[in-house]
Length: 229
Image 1 (spheres, rainbow, N blue to C red):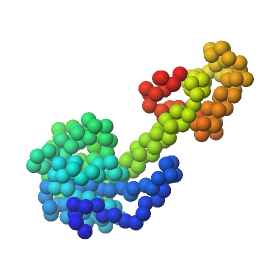
Image 2: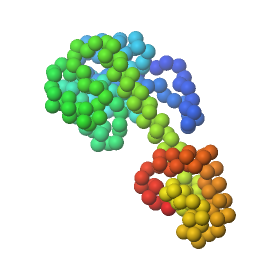
Image 3: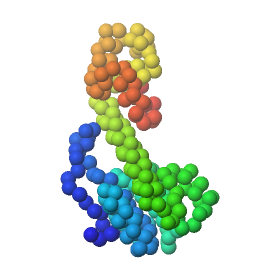
């Protein structure tokens, strides 16, 4: 196996949300020291994860793996773009991929900067095997939770698009806590019509209760909620 290529297992399971085949998480290691990359690779593989190794942030950016599930293990100081530079780039581009930093230098200001920007952990070389594996498990769990949340949002955005303009108005009013009588008065329609629209909204949004409907509404991007009414 080449260390600059992912180690791929068999076919991934299907996602219960999208019905598409889920890609297993990849732990991406970026360090300019080949010996460090090899040691980290052996450890991460022994824990049952896929790995991909790169000698520089530029090589990673050209590798096309940043959208894969998983996390990054980054050396802080490298020739060219540093691990912190890559973190800033990902934050600026809206990519929340979890990052674990490794450094051979204990730098408190750098640690604070990295953690404020969303790093999962900031570890000093040499790092204990279990400490790193624990950090990787935490980072992958964070990534999985974010991806699940993103999938739910995408699903609810698609469902929202199936609503008629009037159904969107009713949904907006229900989300505001308005009852049928108030919605009917505000929209100038009968309560029977409100009930019909409300029933259609719940069916189209896949909600079995008002609580589920409100949670679906709250998962929508704020800008979309503001224009839904």
